[in-house]
Image (cartoon, rainbow, N blue to C red; front, side, top):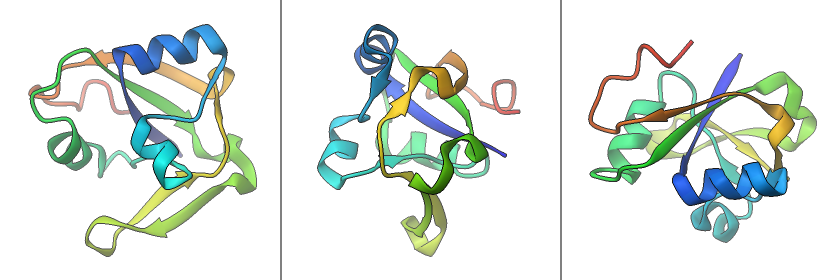
Length: 109
């Protein structure tokens, strides 16, 4: 199953450069990297990235993340995937630049 992480341009470039990331500032503050399922990613965009440009949608195979990936209740009691370790660049299946105002079906697979 693929799960998704949204990064801003500078966060994506840092992951590319450093080979791993602790995520966005909110991830560092919360102590885990927030991911979304295919069904949740549009809501995440609308809630946290409204009007922002230069966003990247990363696809990651959940099974590759091992025991550090926990499914926990979040927005509205829905179960969201949270990664309790840095994300490695090699774990990213695909990264696509997205427009938060455009539909996502063409990049979610």
